Every structure is written in C-alpha cells, then in structure tokens.
Amino acid sequence: MDKKKKIIVWTAAAIVVVAGCFLLTGKKGGGKVSLETAKVSRSSITNVVTATGTVEPVTEVDVGTQVSGIIDKLYADYNDVVKAGQLIAEMDKVNLEAELRSATAQLASSKTEYEYQQKNYARSKVLHEKQLISDYDYETATYNYEKAKATYEQNQAAMVKVRRNLEYATITSPIDGVVINKVVEEGQTVAAGFETPTLFTIAADLTQMQVIADVDEADIGGVADGQRVSFTVDAYPNDVFEGTVKQVRLGDSSESSSGTSASSSSSTVVTYEVVITADNPELKLKPRLTANVTIYTLERPDILVVPNKAFRFIPEVPLLERLGLSVVNPETEASDGKRLVWLKQDSQLTPKLVEVGTSDTNVTEIISGLSDGDEVALALTEELPVMEAPQAERSPFMPGPPGGNKKDEKK
Image 1: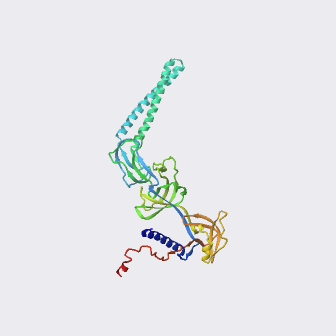
Image 2 (image 1 turned 30 degrees about the horizontal axis):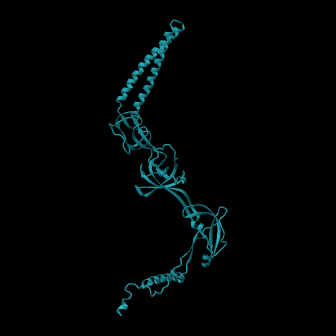
Image 3 (image 1 turned 45 degrees about the vertical axis):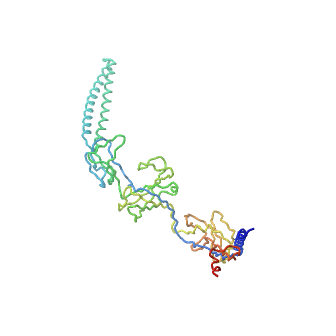
C-alpha cells in the first residue's frame, strides 16, 4: 500500500474515533424542569361570527305606474320627506281623458240599446204567452235582449278600467317616508308593459334601519334570533353600531325582499341572509352602506373558568419529584361525563373531577368541582440537555490545515 492510501485509511479511522468519543464522553448538562400553573378565576366566554352585509331601510317601497305615457310633472326629488297620499308625480292625461270620453259614449249607447231591447223583450214575452207571435219572434227578441245586456255590462267594466287608468296618472306616495331614489325626469316616456316601471323609491323611516348580512354556511348553525350584534361601516370607522338578529332566512328557493334568493351560492361558498335590526337616531347609517358585522353567538359573563390546557395535563411523577412535588393517585382518569384537572396544593398535585359548561378556544367554564383562586397544573416542561464535544487529539497522519507548517518552515 503506497503512502497516499495509508493517509486516507488513517484519516477515516480518526473520524470514527472522534465521533465515538463525542457520544460516549460528551458532558451532559442538567435538564431544568418547570411546572406551569394557573389560578381558577372569573371571566367571560364569548363566541362570535363575523360577516359582511348591506345597510337597508326596514320598509322600502318602489313607486311606479301601471299606465304608459309621458311624465308631465314631478313634485318630489331626492331626500324629500313625503306623506302618505301626497302628490309626487303626474303623467300626461290627454290620451287617458280621450279614452274616458270614448268609453262614456260607448256606455251611453249600450245603455240605450239595452233599455230598448229590454222593453221589446217584455212585450214579446206577453204576446208569446197569448200565442199572438211565433216562437221565432220570441226567441229573436230574447236573443237581442241578452246581447244588449252583455254589451252594456261589458262597457260598464271598461268604464271602470278607464277611470282607474286615469287615476293612475296621478301618482301619490303610498307611505310616509323619504325619497331615496328617483329614476325618471319630466318629459320622459315610460312604458308599462310586462312589468311596472319604477319612478321613485321611498324609505319609510331612516331612524330604523336593518343590515342584511351574508353568513357562511359553516357559521350559520350558531346564529339565532335575538342575539346581540355589533357592526362598523367604512364611512364612520371609529363608531360601533349595535343591533339584534331579527331573522335567519332559510336557504330555499323563495325570494327575499331585495329580490334575491335568501341563500346564495357559488362554486365554493354558500351563504345565508341574516336580518339585523339597527337603531339610527343620528341618521349616520345610509342605505347601501357596507357593514362589517360581528354576531355574538355565545355570551357568558362573570363565570368561573380554567385554561383549556388544564384538561390536557398528564402528571409525570419522576419529573415532578425533581421539583419536590408528590402526586396523589396518579392513575386517576375522567369518568361520569366529568373532566379531570390536577389541583396544586402546597407540594402536592391532587386529581379533581369537575363539571364543565361552555367553552371557547382558550378557556372552559367550570360548573362545579373547583373554587375561585384554586391553582391547577397546565404543563410540565424540561429543557433539553446540552451535549458538549470533547477536544480530540489530531492524528499525526491527518493532513494539517493550509499554512499550518509555515512557522516550522521559517525555523
């Protein structure tokens, strides 16, 4: 074996020796044990659901017209306060008044014809009973009478329709409220075809508003009528508005008041509409504002609680003994629907079975088994030991670092 190969073999052997010395003779630092505890105290448990929604008036009416024509006069504009029955618009009545006169003439003509045929029928009936006219003449008189009667009744109905259309040309407010939208201008033509065209939108009372919030399907199970709600709007970022859940709309095919489905879905998300009442005495909340909603699905104030970590604690006797603590009945387990915690009293850990109530992500309510001020164990930790490698002697056959022999060369 030449000199180069011997160097490689001895180098590998030296590495193995150093690693073995490190594992066998390394100094082990003493692990430090600590016990984390917490006091049983009184607090509040709150669970919330967050969502976004839109501020809407509680009562909102679209005012339209059932007749086609030209808008002649407008008597209301944006933000005007109107009363029920107040005139807010008029349509051009020339054509409607002409239709009324035509219908009146037709009604008068049919009435005259009806009265004549009625008298003729009465005479024919008497003569027929005395067999002074033939059956044909009597049947003809009867036919003419019935036809005239039907025509007269038909014209009476047409007269009612024409008069009502003329009344529709005078548009009044159906409720007390505020005009929040105006769709038409004077001189504009509206066509009442398959649907009624909207002229105005009137909100009944802007001091009482509501928020229509879209709640995710994963959260809707905890939302119920009467729950407290707080929300903010971007227009007033420093103000927090209060409200109450009024209605949780079912996710069927029915239409909501806004004209959309009570539930909406996309390829990935299903949401449900939740109606929230909100007082608006200062009129800060305006229709169509976006609201960031917080629904309080659970509120339990001033109750006895412990951290949830207390229920996951497992006493490790050897480690606790290093802290000078003894464990009473370390094999105790939870039973009878109760939860197990470990109560620290002086130098002892004692198992306690407790009855629990509501819970959130951090704490759980204690119904019975513990008192205010009791100290419970949460977690037991031990620091990992520190391994220190010893200084190993360098093999004479291992090559030295670059430049290591320069000093000897100088000598």
